[in-house]
Image (tube, rainbow, N blue to C red):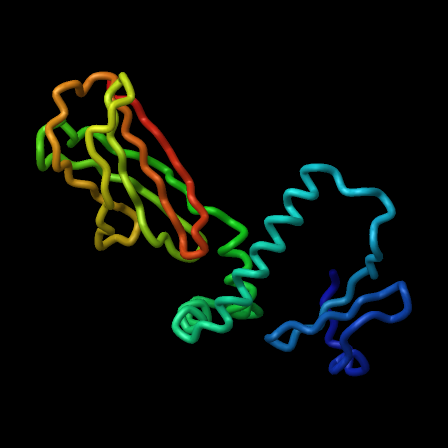
Length: 188
């Protein structure tokens, strides 16, 4: 898309025939682009999955616009040329990421700690940790606590783990639209 400062196009928006589309951004910038019509090729399975995720994101964003508290959170985080609705769609479309699970402070003793670093394009709502033995027996699970840096979530062990080697630490991160990401590590 090309930017335009043309006086004639200043207040215009929409399509000109089937050749040109004029889009006006919130900042007042006018964009010109080639008009796109409907595709004559049926969508692939992957394209259908993307379309389905996008539809769900739109449903979420519409619900956010009806909730004054949530709408306010998204409005406060919106940047130039972005609305709360746009941000909510993006947030619902993209799941949070878990970049690491740090277990060097986890000794299997009660009170030892596991740190999970989770990020999201808007906000990670919660992080849950589950510890299982190598045989698959759940030792404990619970919510981690967000730290002051806004990135790390710390889980404090509440049960003794005598079978530390081979134990699996699973962390799941949820964002506001309830997208979930799970990451597991095995204790060596």
